[in-house]
Length: 403
Image (cartoon, rainbow, N blue to C red; front, side, top):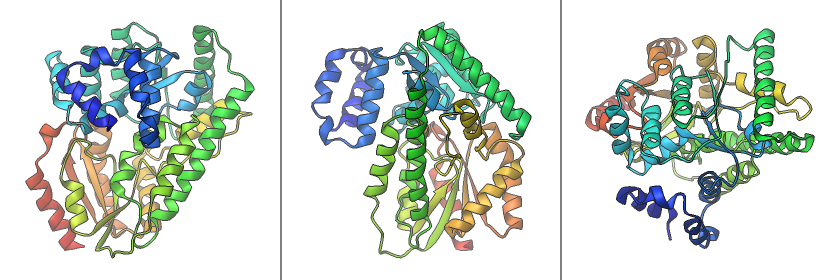
């Protein structure tokens, strides 16, 4: 039995709202878990714990450090990742339309419009809190604030200023400590030393597994599927701090087989991918293109120290190359392109992302000065209505001819 197909069918016929909150459906589906991949089993446990309220639930933004969530005994429910999952099932449009009917403009990020559509139609579990950062997305904290108002729960926002200098780090550390203490009071549960050791230890183990993936991406030909790496971005951020984290990334690494076939092109991917069914990756594969890495699945942080948990989490937040001036991002891209022996860069410019689209031209010109060709593909990661495949294919073919 394919759990993904089952869930998709229930979303289509409208029965998923009731089933998501039914204990018997999880008991029934658990019979089939042994034959499923670790990522499916992780998703099952996350959904079960959230919808049945087996643990306190925290709605989280993509870059919020989930190590804190797991240390508190909570279950993270990452709304932007859930939006990507719904889109991958081909079910995005009805929820996007619902949000648009409630005056959420189409020029807003589709991840957030879709998340709001899910909330408005009662497809989300009841959260206890909402947790988000101001980085990297300007619209993210506004979206999460609206969600907290809709569900009538507290919203804890961590402001992430500047470039990560000493004063910036100290400011974020103070906010993390205050948030931790307020959550402890709300949940009536103190984080013990062993909780931090477990959570940060799992995150460190996940980090070590990711570094092994990065080594494989530098091989020629590249054995790591770029489509799979982009698809695992949400997984990497959601399971950091969980016992599932190192197991999931280890299973991914062990599934990789060295590819004896040749490559025609090696490209590095910027931003995210379209999550709905689209022909782009099949087309790239036909042309012999390897995606040898991408920005977000290559987000790596320093080792975390359980003795200084908030400082460690602050360092993890500031390890994100997208913070600060665009030069930080450019330098990181150039380094990764050189490491992976990539011939060029594809920048998928997600229409709703002000930061990505706003910096696209500057990025392209800076990479051109470094001798790195850059193709900008305008599109949307979640909304299939924005896909113009014929135009996109023509631009990709022209770019490959230049290479």
